[in-house]
Image (tube, rainbow, N blue to C red; front, side, top):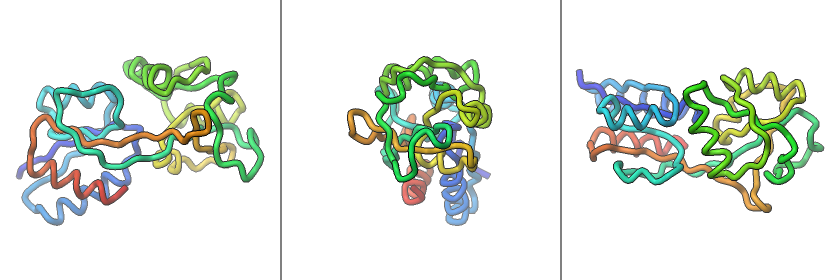
Length: 201
């Protein structure tokens, strides 16, 4: 049986990928979709080494070696201690968070990539502390010590009454994250999967 190997950045959330996998396998009974959750840089290493046919990740720096297809644009959310802002407020500007600690949700080997995203690309001016997982970051934030950032799809999967989730803005303009499918070479099966996945977002 043919395998379609898809490496995805593990902070994007997996629900849409699982739904696309089920639909793809229904249409292609001779192909098994293998989903590989991984860190950001590791996903592209797998694509370059031929260990993955497709990468699903947010767009950051230019990836000239790969073809790409935009799948969705989603909001970036700040996850804060509950009660940080009054009910009814839906957005917070990144400049208002600069005195709070921002937790980098990353395993040690992924910290550099995530710090680059937050500091250089999002230009967040908060002090940073690493946290190994979303669960750990959520506990730290719930206790009142800082905040962390996630896209709205992943943020909506966090069920914790001690947290408050607000859309992040930059000078009042909503910050967005583009979710992209990257290919090393155009593969009909990979293209079909990304077309199905695009409809799930």
